[in-house]
Length: 360
Image (cartoon, rainbow, N blue to C red; front, side):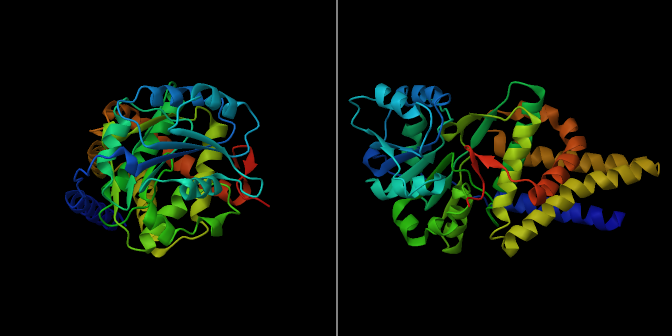
């Protein structure tokens, strides 16, 4: 068993290096603001909108249009946007009709109203630097471009949750030459014509969330060109969850989305990560218990080097390498967190924007 697992680690590491070497590079596209429509669905985001508004107001270059899509908010977020952007012709604040609800419905509604060739979806709780749109206009050269989402943290727990999120995005980035396993609608750019060709979001309307996951799968199914962008100038920032309840609600919601249309590639990647992340911890406990300290320290060292390579390969351009300092705590706690999240998907129905994840 020990030999088999170290062999697995070796193969795993080699595949990571090969995939990283084959990672697709950006070629700058023609800069034309008329090509870009920004779509921002929002529901009960009054408290989060000021940060987004401030980011938009600070931009060096603005997109041709920004469509705020109100998903039946119960607060005064829409009134806030109407006041701030009064007289700004590039901004439209649109309410969904009663027959349409949910983020997928809001995005589909916005895409159909858009005039640009490319659509960029953002979450209402994100912020970004002043060159964000200027740089984004140069990235319109693939069917889908998955931008970085950085979770800001201000406590020990939120740093732990943020590191977990960034590490998994780092693995997604490292393996993207073989298979892209996830995307975030908080920063997702796509070619509108391709969207209309492949879109199946209406078929998943019963699930309140999951727009990014299903759209990624649609693009993959039709062999679209997909690039992961780890440049800081195209990153967005959002606040990490800071408590256990919010953490499990969010992670169970994310994992629950994959249960509906899991394919063999996702299964292989998922199982490999489970064997890597959980298996190494279990084997480390076994070796320590049997006083085999040579192999114990060898295992810890190999795992540390692989994780450091994966994390730094993704985050070096994002400027968050120091978050890796929380790695020892993550190594010990993550197997228990992961087990609890998996267990929770069978017994817990998470909430999203005040709605159940699965709409009745």
